[in-house]
Length: 125
Ligand SMILES: [Zn+2]
Image 1 (spheres, helix red, strand yellow):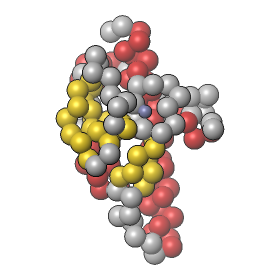
Image 2 (cartoon, rainbow, N blue to C red; image 1 turned 90 degrees about the horizontal axis):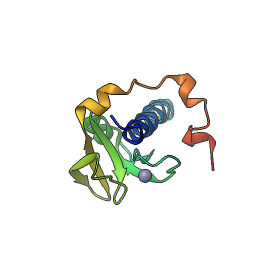
Image 3 (cartoon, rainbow, N blue to C red; image 1 turned 180 degrees about the horizontal axis):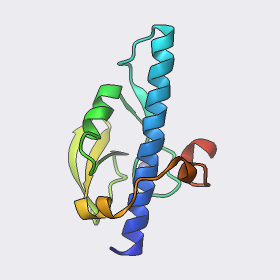
């Protein structure tokens, strides 16, 4: 797999991990407060571009459905990279893209230590 594709998958997986933590925390807070846990959450775009800080709105249920397939990621409309992924669905103003399965498998899931590095989109402007 070319380095650039590997890097792109790494970026997407990192964003997905941050989003899952975000989802957990938001859901926990809403549950504590008795708020609606199905209300939309501002997820980070899971596109291939390092440094993308755009957000998209999805409910916890929608997000969970997308990621029941490991090769699927959510991206802001226009952030898809057709050379390495294909668009499989459109939900309002964001897209669901499917990465090549072998590319996804080849890149290990990031750990918390990876998120603590500079790539963490939650610690940057
Ligand atoms: Zn993006």
